[in-house]
Length: 342
Ligand code: SF4
Image 1 (tube, rainbow, N blue to C red):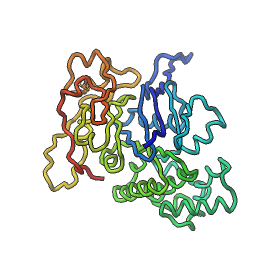
Image 2: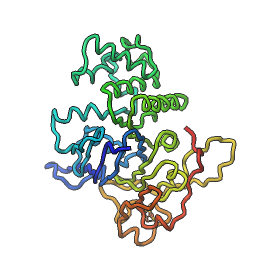
Image 3: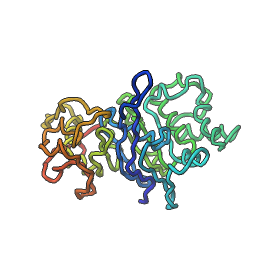
Image 4: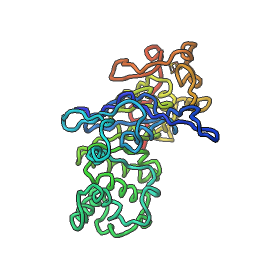
């Protein structure tokens, strides 16, 4: 698989302004030096607790936030890489068509005063792709693609269930025939019963349209079901990146181990022998992170060096990269194959 997107040392730091003069007194490091690549056709999961920088990363990639450092390189069909920082205004338009986002809450992300025709057709109009009857045909086709009837295009979002509204959000994201779709907690607001249907729809659409996904979620069961590889984030940084089966069977970072210990068992009638690791303390403050390894105040394996030296993300074999001083020495617990449930 060829690389579609290269993210190099990506940073998004927000200034903290205080006092009458709004002087900058510090920075929130929402994204703090992320490096990863996404290959054509893969689904990369981005996981971590809320506030760890997952959504900010997604927003930098779709360009609704301008990063404050690092680079995002985009290449399509083997063409030379384009550095997004070098593009401005209309030069970014082809990229904005190629990289689209699905939002978390289908209740608030659809304008209640717009019909489905306008909601799904708006990107087509804004990018000058279609208008009039051509636009209407395309909207009908998109509704069919996501399992809704074309006759629904004159209706408003309130007439639909949460799952149906998320189908509309997906149709809107697909309207410009994108290459990469950033799905930000796309099934988190849905009932468990419709979650699997939407995940299956995303898989079918991926196969049909050769899509690549960046799938942002705090739900490790869903990520295991859908993703080829997983990046685990903690306080703006990736602490572990591996293919899904390897990460779930053999985590190499203590934070990943703790997250996996909370994955629900598939059959509640069977006894779960896995011990739930309850992390002490809160997630570190991204405006004032701890010294050394950001995870050390909560890590049950921490040693003195962990408070002094920040571990760098490094290759430990099996296609896994991890940021822990003791990744080779620790024997951590994962979950057995298929142990999680959507
Ligand atoms: Fe824990 Fe130390 Fe590894 Fe950080 S570097 S995860 S504190 S063992």
